Amino acid sequence: MAAFETHEVFNQSPPYEGIDLFASDAALQEAVRANGMAAPDAVLSAFGRHWGRPDIFEQARLANEVTPRLKSFDRQGRRSDTVEFHPAYHFFMAESMKAGLHCMTWRADASRAPAPAEVARAARYYMVAQVENGHMCPITMTRAAVAALGVEPALADLLMPKIVSHEYDPRFIPWPKKTAMTLGMGMTEKQGGTDVRANTTVAVRDGEAYRITGHKWFMSAPMCDAFLVLAQTGEGLTCFLMPRFAPDGQVNALRFQRLKDKLGNRSNASSEVEFAQAYAVRVGAEGAGIRTILEMAQLTRLDCAIASAGLMRMAVAQAVHHTRHRLAFQKKLIDQPLMRTVLADMTLDVEGALAAVMRLCRSFDHAATDPQEAARARLLTPAIKYWVCKIAPALTYEAMECLGGNGYVEDGIMARLYREAPVNAIWEGSGNVMCLDVLRALSKDSEAALAVLKQLAAETADLAGAPETVSSIAGILGSGGAEAHARLAVERIALLAAAAALRASAPAFVTEAFARARLAGQRGATYGAAAVAEDAARKIVERAVPA
Image 1 (cartoon, rainbow, N blue to C red):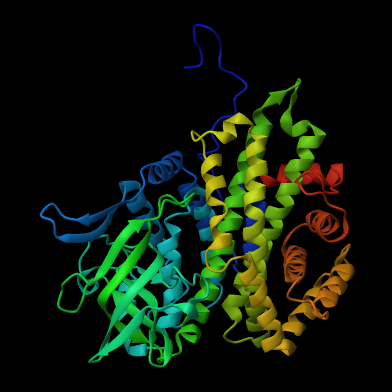
Image 2 (image 1 turned 135 degrees about the vertical axis):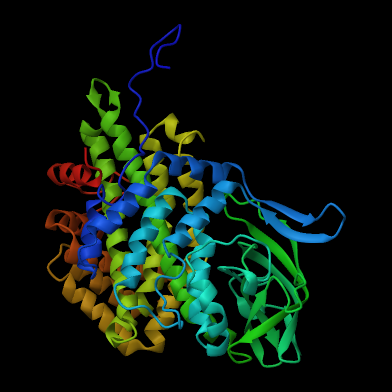
């Protein structure tokens, strides 16, 4: 109702929904083409229209407002250890599994699907993350867990028919009786966190299987059908598969203590759990737990970067859309030079983040057959995760400010995006862990890693500030204090990788503006304080969201 007794409602932006998330995103279209996905428009545009529907946005609101509930006991007092979700959560799980986001990078025999499977999946994942990111946790874990299962071919043969199913089966029954299954992970404990070598959970052999006693401090998506967990054996830290049901059909001894009351990621349940001699089977050799999960961790980190890029894209799209409709001081906000600079500055980071993650996905697509792409994936995954996930909270806040008070209230999407934005920088290895991982890659296989840096230098050689950035990285890495200053080096590696990726996919005016603002120019501590020429700012903002 526009007319009230006291006033008319006007000068309010319409909802940003009923949109094609692919066709309205020139940068995404360019990135998928540049990284090997030929003629993607029709399929991805249909996907983008589907996920941009108003009713999908409404389902996202419901999934995050009506949060999961732990049911520890049934009405007769028996342990239940189940979690209740709003139907909207199940709706999103069904949609993402129907699209194959949990399995499309794998063949049925647990081998990698051919290129451009990673790029094709990432394009879809990027669009889904813009709408509802919480349910993507079990989607990501299921996809990544297959990398660990590859060391146990017999086990993979049993599980893969259920994993590659595109049906969603939420029933709480043993996985062999289901049409499909999802996989979760339980790695960290109270005393160690990221330092999983400090884990105290113990596994004791029981015939061909093991019994696990201990706890996990964070175990997300507790209604998954099985979990990869780390536990100590006589040989050291070892990886195990722990199903929700034991082979005799009884509920396995996972005792959920409570669900985390998280800042964001509210649609997704994250639990604290105890294992009371829970049944599990070994994955990989005893003592090889870290080695078993390494490739899996790379895949989860890649998804963190894709998701954060998607969150930033939606935040900027909301800001551009609002400012295009909102008048202030007799001018639309988008036509005011200062606002346009803010919007352009944010858009440069979204474009750089998207280009970087899509180029990284291309490396994953070809890593098995191209050692140079494998080295690129190894070095740049932690670097790009570090930079993309770190900038998401600040960018999301700035986009919220563009909407003023309307952005700060829970009625719209911006508050949810802002609460969601920090999660990917913390999960799957926080900022310092990512920086140390980059240093580890540089020291463990220095020849291959340095070749990647040389390739980035060559790809960006004629961009403003690139030679100086390369020299700065070399100076930090060559100094005795490389670890103390690793954040600066890693950020610059990521920026260089983003510039190189933009050079291969984006128009020259975008790439050159990014290089001037991120590699060469003086930049303040906030968005809008970078050197972005007015002409370039106008074109960057116009391209961000078509009028």
